[in-house]
Length: 146
Image 1 (cartoon, rainbow, N blue to C red):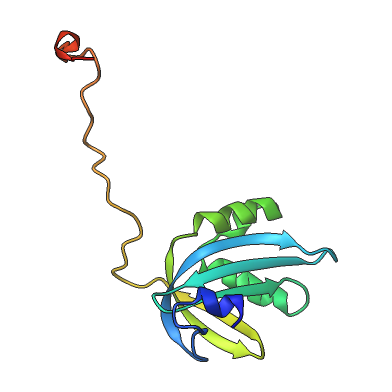
Image 2 (image 1 turned 120 degrees about the vertical axis):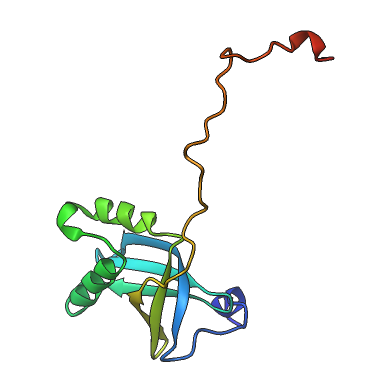
């Protein structure tokens, strides 16, 4: 069994042609030892875990740009690979509807949309503010046994 199979809950990758809601676990830009630039994303569902590697050279450029745009990144506001990497990292933990296509040993992943009704963050009561120390607080120091 490969390590990738071990990482997935059911021992395999999503079936070819699957459309499913998947959480973006990790996303980043890196340069290979040969100097080629890649975008790598890691995805998970309740049953599967897989990685998607997209080079930006040749025909890969258009597909990589489509991936970045589908993740909601406005490339017109970025000026470096580092800035793109920062924007990719912000999307980690977000759930997307993706389509998976197998191409030999590779799993191509195409972001279709963000699913409706998926909670992206825990709601925070931003109106709640604790009473600042000294503002009407009672001094209990004498009652504390330590």
